[in-house]
Image (cartoon, rainbow, N blue to C red; front, top):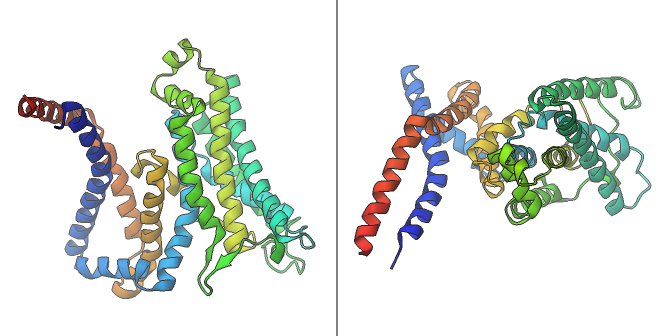
Length: 364
């Protein structure tokens, strides 16, 4: 016979799944209404979006390609946010990772492929970790807001990338502001050509459960979550707040940097200005939709990857600007935040109490 406790647990699971799905449904409803008001066909627009994302084999694999960097950066943001460390710098950490990977990779033409790939990915991971840990150290040592420091490092990363592709990493002919292509030895393995499926996707899928286990089944993960819930209480009970902040920001940066290295090694093979279309910023939306759960980051990233991939299809098929997709993404976040307002939270608590009371009477 079910108990009130088991009923409450099921309710928590349903609520955790229901919020993102409900926010998505409301956002799509608002978008459909706006399309109808503007004279467009909402059903045809959504059909074109779905077809552009999953309409054929290559479209589906391109959606996976677009989702992969969002998994890495989404995990990076989720890990930091779980400790109330507001890492807005996944974009810069990804760029630093790609920059370090390119700087090392162009010199590995004579290496065997497995160690060359390991060096490229390791360099990207290390560069992202240094960028993240620096911001964590500034917070722990000088009480510098990580929001400010990570945002400023984003600008530094963009300028460093621009300097590199116009300077020391520029391709040999000096005709275009792009880096020299990585040698084949430094490129990640691809599968089922002409698709761009690659080993980096496997790494992204493996990283999500590893991050979940670390966050919820290790002492370090518990300390980070305790820091996020109540920093004063965590410090009172002996959690080394400064050290946890530095480590968590470093770990967050490492995952974002690895995402940049994977994108370079598996997909682009070159650095160029605007290497990232904003994956580090979009990762904030991915993490919030996933409710900071590392396992939920994968489907959340797939959702945003599908929206990104289908955005151009709606312009071709229906003449609707792809900016509409960005508006839908923003609406999802807005609705999710609205769900957490005190008024709605109070309604949910009252509903949970009534459910538990009804369950208790049924058990009796």
